[in-house]
Length: 427
Image (cartoon, rainbow, N blue to C red; front, side, top):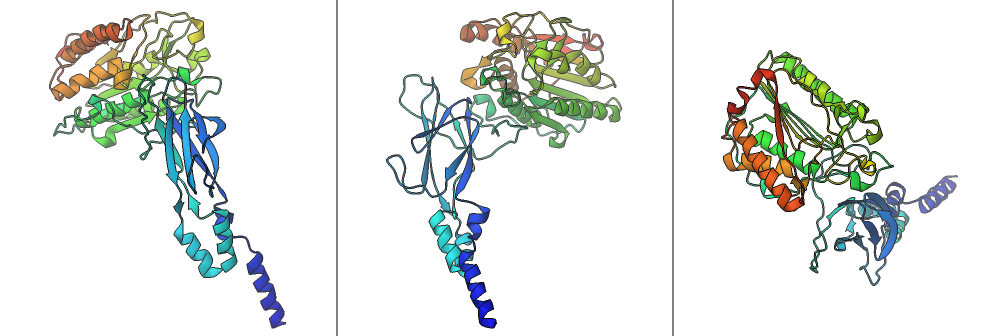
């Protein structure tokens, strides 16, 4: 009987599937993202018939071919108007798995070797596509640090490619009574399947990410006092606004609040009320967005020292790329409501204008010059001086570079009309 048990045990060991093959499999999912999205994904010269952002299932054991070496994946992203970008990923070996297999069982170890289950590739690959300007060079970047976004949106890293993203002066002082709500809504197409990537707001995540750096380093907002969101849904945006509202209530009139938003804005066609748009709200239902009127009411419900709002969006139905209702072809001059409290609102454009991108700087025009002046002065200026600089530069440079008018404006509440321009940013 003992011999029978021993034989059954040996046979079981021989027939038992490999540990790594069970847990890791012979294939691996690799997530591909690109900026801009919509690039065709090729693996080892073969078109996967998928576009970024997508997950592609690749075989762990890759035979050598004309395109790749043995156990190497060659990924090529192709998009019209951009250089082809190639990234080569040589498989790494999970040595611990092989050690365990061969230490415990011989046959499972051999199975793993044959199946390639001990091999692993990068889980995520991000490529910044280089516009085809006639040059033959190719720029390839692999994303290392990720900032997660919600839903099906690709993960994102702030790459700091612009001059305003670097060499940010640092104020030695932190203001415990300063708070910030920062939102960058760029990727609408990942949350709304009926939208193309052309409706996404170019560089909105860069804008918000850079403004966060300036809030920390120049405005002196403590990191724990910052509410930061990328590609925020309706629920997330409402949560952030409610949190700021409660903070102001608890601060007993001492709070200084900065609100920054980059993304789509849209007017209601019937009422002409202006809305900032969460990434999960359709342009057909603007009234399901966040009404500016309601936002301002939340920001002034309780007393405060000052509330400064920066909005890099337009509310005419236009946008940096395509509007959420681009096919409509109609622009609306949105309604403006009176402001209360100590509230100042910096807006990127006026009336029926669009808020445009500064492609060379990878920011919105308005945001770039807002940050540029803060960088140049280290925050040692008044809000009036900041307003003059933004207005003069955006108005002129927009015509020169984009061949379109964009005239920033400032709206103030009645309570601070005489004083806001003299408020010091660094005090």
